[in-house]
Image (cartoon, rainbow, N blue to C red):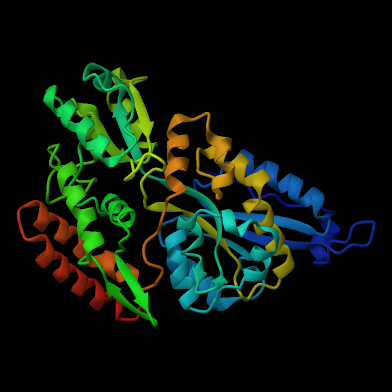
Length: 419
């Protein structure tokens, strides 16, 4: 996405002289530099936001610079270490990336600002928790996205299923019923560990837990084992490969190419499905991943972005003002409507009820979680013993033995500081 930076038009003589921008009223203007990621917000949204922000903050100008996701980690770390003029004052980062920047000591503590009047109690936990270290808030939730169930309404109707299931047991029964009609009730790859994580959280388990600053893998707890057992039962109702994840092959293509009734994916996958099989246009529906009871959806892994402020900013007040506006109800709901995101608070979910897929995503996001809030989690994902554990269980190995093995490997990875 191309985005032209919005700058204040001033007389060329002042530009050449390098003088401060001082309006007729005598207020000196300062520039707040904001790094946002490519694709997070449309150029039209940023234009509207910038114009209103500058109009209501007569001492501030915005310099919004769009960044590529590729290589962003190293670029952000360099900016946090360098400081000085020209560096970013506000940065959009992936929610699960916040711990690594906190670990480097480069982020501003925003606890007082966020507790004051930013609605901290209503933030989605999957965005807020990775941005917090113990009781200190560094990352401010901006927007979220998570998995839902994409299903074929026609196959559900042909199988006599009145509507989307509300509980896990109803989900299993419906999927078995779809199978009995000659369909593939669900396509669920054997190594879709993000989906497994939701089932584990639903049971009260975790991938890893911290005690006194020490992280330990916990796939071998009774709760986590129950989550894996549900995954096994559901995965068996389709032909997903036991030794591959959802991208090998891409599950959207599998869904488009045959009589697959359901996949677990972000709603945006529906566009890819219809592009590959236009006959499915209008035939797709969405529902939240079911939970153990009908009163609330199941837990899901929540992706998305947080806003952070570098500790070395020389525009602290201006940076805080930008974060407050972008994460506030007005602009957050407008961003959600514009980009089909989940707003940063469950109380704002009504803003996206008009889009079936986004509404399903928002319902699940209220129960959302993120990966363990430690920078060393990246080392776990690099080798990902969770995937190997899943494959072994799905191909007949003893779940308890394999869970202990995977938990040990997680513990070992989390014990080695990144550097």
